[in-house]
Structure formats: structure tokens, C-alpha cells
Length: 587
Image (cartoon, rainbow, N blue to C red; front, side, top):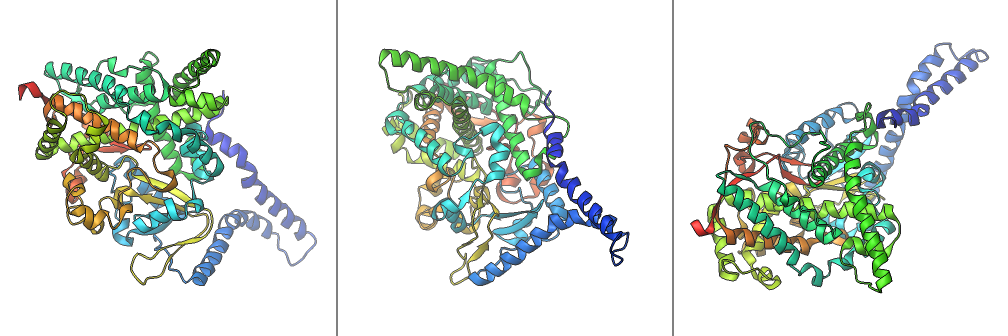
């Protein structure tokens, strides 16, 4: 039986902990026998002090070097967070606490109010910078793309889940993956709505059945099945048909965050649960940096979920390999799915597995989260729902299947989706490591550039940036899709396009962006053709979804929230989104 990660970590690093004190003690003890000026107590004192010296000495010397470089460049230092405690203990504790009560624009507590839109922390001897400045993020994602990489710590921490896939690689490996997947998202593929139609009709049918029972629908669960079925069909060529499983009913104290794996669960249900938890565990590991194994001294929290994921993915890959063999025999070369294309391009099953999981992360959770938040906001703003439904009826009518051109012409529909992603970005935080020292541009005209030392991990938060009043106007905390169609577009977004980055930007911009827009648009159109009103059912919500009392003291959106948020690699509504909807024929 494999040892837990924490014990493996200690075994591999014991020589670093024990070796230097032993060597120093032995050397000083030996010298004390021959050199009168060296007292006997020097040996134990030296053995005790050598580890702190080895830990903090390089940091101290690096700080001196960085200060000299900063002055030579004539740059300002990034404001440093004081009072973080030994090795950043207080900051780490604060982050863990905030993660448990996650709100997209509240992860760093009051630090943005104290230190501004960017600041520097030190955790476990690692320099970490948070920025919400569009000009800084543009440098990271575009103008200095080659200097800002995922970095070895991030890649190593996420490797058990993502392997060397497109979201967990740098340099030539990333370029290889990008080139491998880009052709599959050509317009002729993403404009084919047949897959959307089949699964959307099934989703609306099961929703209508549940509502006719007089019961609310967990919209997030239902739309998560829709996006999973679409992703598995489009990417893998496998009809998972998770929408055929019974939808959950509201139950007292219901919580879907259980870590228990039910061996008798349907493959779709067990995969979704393990897929979500695997992402969450990987995210917690990232908070621990390179020392995350110490958080798992007695068991490997990720392994049982990876077993479930691999048991789902590996047979699908084998099926694609068989299709390839049959196609070669028949002289067929066209790839029906992304997995078919991967199998055609390489025989490396590890690479195929890594890319498959990476694509599922991107194809399922981000889309279902955006649709869930869009419906949540529309239920809270019925006048916007009515306006959107009118656009649907005017453009497509009450029952016609929408086309690519229909979606392209529906400006308010795109605005609703964009506004949902502005307030609730699917990936609220991301980060890159600076390979070489560099500078960020000043945030005020005539100011000095900002110095970024080599090796610094720079976290950028679109969640904070999307809600900044100085970037989006005084109503930045309100849900208002019209901001994407009225004069505010020219006032705020056109002059500074980097203030809105739900799909990232630069060379690593989301490769499936247009596919996601088409899928979300198609589903919302079909939904509003079928239902004329949407309302939250707060009596059905699980206790775990109720916002903490302290949220009510916050200004703007957070103080009004009726549900809690949570996150793994992506943002979502905690546990459930129960809604009631009125069928259009009854309105």
C-alpha cells in the first residue's frame, strides 16, 4: 500500500533536515578538541542555528539583490503586507478561512482596502503578489507572455489531476497541446448545434416533468448534467446520458459536498462528484505551495477520486483507439471528436488522458457555472428576464430551433451572459510565475514602473477587477446587462478591454470561447422559449447554501446574496440552486 504524500515528503527530505545539523555538530565537536578558541557549547548551538540560516539566509540575500535591481531600474516596490506572522502563518490562516466562506471578491479580506489594487505577501518563504490592475494583467497574459509561466510548483501540484495537459504546461509542451486542439474548434464544428439541441431538449423535458410534480428544480444540477452530456459527446464521442438519472429533490440539510464515494452510483454521478472534489483538493494543495504534502500526512485525499476519474476516462480512450483502427482499415481520416483527433495524432495514452481531462475541466464546469449564475441573476431581476425573453421571441419565435446566425444577432443575450461572467467569473483567480525580473507599468500617468522580482508568483484576480467601481462605474456591484450594450461600453470597456477577462487573454485565451458562447446562448434560448418566469425557491435551499450572517454587512452584491458561492478550479453555487419556473403555455 503506497505511503501518504506527507510521509513520502518527509522521507525524501529527511536528509535536508537532519544532514546539516549532524554535519555542523560533528565538525564543531571535532574542532573543539584541537582548537582552544572553539568552546564545547558551539557544537549544539551551531547544529540548532544551521537550519534557520539555510532557510532564511538565501531569502535575505535575494532581498538585497532585488532591492539593488529595483533601484537600478528606477522602479517602485510593490506594497508589502505586514504582520503576516512567522512564514506567513497568519496570512495562510486567513486565506484558508476565506476559502471556506468563499466569495469571489472577498478572498483576501480587507487587504485590498489597506494596500490597494496590488500588494506583496510572503508565505512559506515564497513571494506572492496579488494584482487587479488591467495593465499588469495585460503584461502577464500578453506583452510579456514568455516571462510569465505556470511555473514548476503549480505544475507539480496539479500534475496528479491535469498531468501535462494544456492547462498545466509551459513552453514547447503547451504549444504542442495548443496546436493539437485548436483545429478542432473551427467554426464549422462549433456552429453545428445538433448536439446542443438533443441534450437541451432532454434537459428541458426532465425539468418540465419535475416542475409538474409541484417540486422545484436544482437548476445547477440539471444544467451541469446538460454540459457534461454535451462535453462527453462533443469531446469524447460518448453518450453519457446523465440527464436520464433522477434529478435531486430538496431535502433538509442537503449537502452535495460529501467526500464519500458511493460504489453503486451511476458512472456519471460518481464521475461528477469525484471530478469536482479532485479539483477542490488540488486547489487546496496549491495554497500549501511546495510543502502541501504536509497537509496529507495520513492519507492521499486525491487518489480515490482520481481512481474514479481514470475508471471513466480510460475505457473511453480505448474505444477511441478501436475507432481509429476501424477507420484506418476503411480508409477514413476525419476525426469525429477531439478525442478521435488526439488518438489520430499520437499513440501516447498518458498524453491523451491528460488532454482529455483538461478539456473536460474547461468544457463542463465553466459553462454550467455561468448558466447557473445567469439564471440566479435573472430570477432576481425579472425585468431583465422579460427583456431577454422578448428578444428570444422576436428573433427565434416560441418554438423554432435557433441557428448560428440567430445567436450571433442577439445582442442582449450576449450581454446577459457577459454580465453574469463579469460578476461571477468562472475562473475568479489565476496566476503565473515571473521567470526573470521585470516591471509592471505605473498605474498613474508619470508614475514609476513597479518592480517584480524573478521567481515571484503573481496571482491576478478578475473577480476583484470585474467589480472595481473605478473601472466599471459607480454601479459596478449591480447586475445590469445593459452596460454591455449602452454608452458604458464606449466609456469603460472600449478604452480598456483588459478590464473584462472571463476567458483570459493573449496566447492562452480560452480556445473554446466561441463554443461556450454558442452552447450557453442555445440553452438560454430554448429555456426561455419553454418558460416565461423564474424564481428562487428559498424554502428548498439546503442550509449549507445560506449566506453567512457577516455577508449581510457587506455593500453591493454580497450584501444581497441569497445563496453562497464555492470554488475548486472554477466558481459555482454551493450545493444547489433550486428554482421554480412557469411554463410558457401557462403564462
